[in-house]
Length: 348
Picture 1: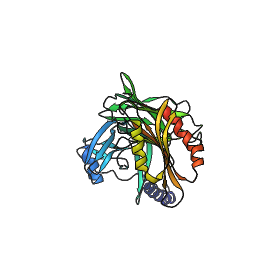
Picture 2: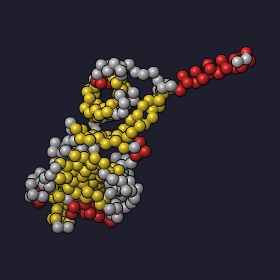
Picture 3: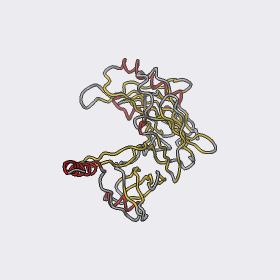
Picture 4: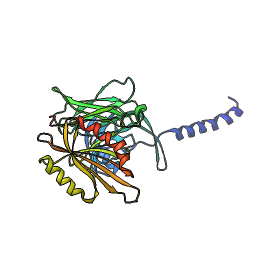
């Protein structure tokens, strides 16, 4: 090789080496003896592994909790040749998982970190996981169906009170339907954020089912209402924007007494009340208007007081910034009265 070529070739070697160095990912994190230690040292928290499964080669997909976060978080850990563990993926620590009834859920993209520039981490997603807790101990199987045309049910892994499904990262913005049960049959059904893009009128949107044998409740509601939630007091709320439908237990009492108590609680905010027939049910009804703090109309709450065997309940529909009773009766009251006839309690 001539001296002239060498003068060009050597600088090119240095340039290639420097460029390769720039494209490499961040240096590997330190390795530790246990998974818990690998997470805890990096995050500065105490970590406990709740679930793990192989994730190709020497890596494992793990779900874990920390001493400062009630919910489950997902990440990937890699095992070194010496048997130690280290983090290879970015992780987002979340709070308590949303409870939709017999199941809670969360979702995350998982893969590997490509590079870190300043405070920004760039990662490549290899899978999208949807996971959560099984809150009904009688459930042994969970099935998830993506809200896509032609989608088929996916059987989740269920182990140690945790359920998990892996889907393509392309499905990270796709919502889903859940079913769960045991050898005796179905115990839970819910639709998570499905339907809002198909129909904007709740009086015309198709009804979807919510069923939870553990709570002893079944109902159908317009598909554009999404994200069922159950709080610690057992109140089920299904929301569409700021409009909500909620169901909660009521004291066991005669219908007239339930109505009297509700009217007294509403005070001068009560616009109308009485006993009425909805479908095959005789129910107490109280319509309440609570003025908005910003002066923009009132939040209307329509309470239906329903004695149902041992399980009395109150179904409440609410909508904010209402200015007209006529508008409420024409547009929102029919939504409530679509739902009420589908209600079943004591379904265990």
